[in-house]
Amino acid sequence: MAMMENLAGQQKQLALDEKPERTLPPTYASYDWISEGLAERSGENAIIYAYWDQPFGCKVQRQNREPEDFLPDWPVLDAPDYGRKAELKSVLSHHPKTLGTGITAGPGVDKAFQDYIATLPLSLTRLAAPFGPQQWLLLDLFRRAPGLWRKVHQQTGLGRLGTLSLTLELFCAAGRTRPQQRQQLATALNETTREVVLTRYLGQTPEPSLLALLEQVPPGSGILEHRALKAALNQKSETQDLKDLVRMKDEMTDRILKQTDWPETLQIRVLLDQGLSFARILHIVQSGLRNLTEAERAGALKALKLIASPQKLQWWLAHWTMLAGRSREIPPPPIPATSLLSPLQTLSAIEEENRRMRNGIARYVPDVLAGDLYFYHWDGHPAATLCLAVSGNGDWTLLEALGEDGVPIHEEALAEIMSAVQAG
Figure (cartoon, rainbow, N blue to C red):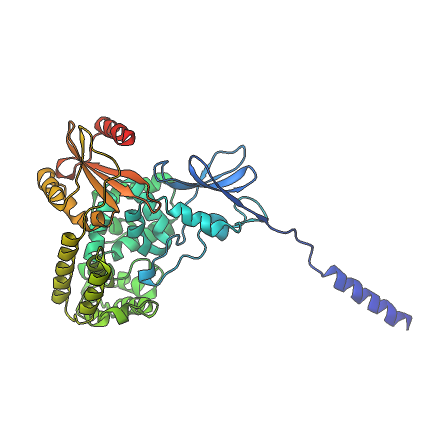
């Protein structure tokens, strides 16, 4: 009997010993705005999300230590047209121990980060949104190479985003993502073709047929580790079979269609079967519907459902963009005119500037009508076209200053322009 009681006592003690140790409740971060941007803070330590002109970036700042660069590698922007929603956006939401054990994102994280995103240029966040986990990286590259956004804007219009998306994936997978490497990538993408940069990161030159197919893969799909891509890259050119890669592209596109209402909006599968990429169709539809009045939009959507060929889709786009240009005025400029600074407030003024400076700004008319971009003529030496970008909260920033033929302005002249713009 005594033995049984002793055994029961030992088992009770073992049960007590196996109970988990008491854990302290988490410490929640607070959120405040400083001169640099948004601070996700715990005591003297913080994660700083910098404003666009600070310049843009993310860093971990610990007490008595040098700030550390940080590159978020998860979605921070919603992409509803791709059926994607960014859930956990801040660093502490993903990595709770970044500022110390037990420190996690606070209850105000969603509102604070939403307000931070609203400080960034709308035109750039719109371009970056389809790229999934590489959104922050692409925004960082835009900041490092001021002309890069124009190239991505053009590629978006053509629906050719697949190779850029794969290049960004390869860059992140290589693990060499420090600021110096990001600057090198930004410069390369800005000064050479995306195919050349992709070849550099792949370590081989893909066949033209493979490159053409990769361009049609929806951006942000995460294809780097997909078996079909690896098989296509390992095949010899004379025996290359891309059926598996085509199937992969179609599956990724179908996944997007199931998560959005695109199949109800237009005959999108018919257009896809005729060779248009999803990104191309998406851009055409968005461009056609943008800047329309409510009544015009209803008519455009009704006509859109009847379209079953790429040619008719182009006619639809031409009709509705022309109508928007006639029925909508350019919003008032954020900076008043000066002796050297003249806002381009009409479509004819933008077209005249486009001819005079030969810098291609006419392609941004839809962005101007929407109030996302503003253009000015700078009558200095040298003359320049200034592009101001509006953020989600209504502020603006000087995005770029272009000379004739789109050549960037040299630093001394740019400093004079910056001074005049800031004074305005």
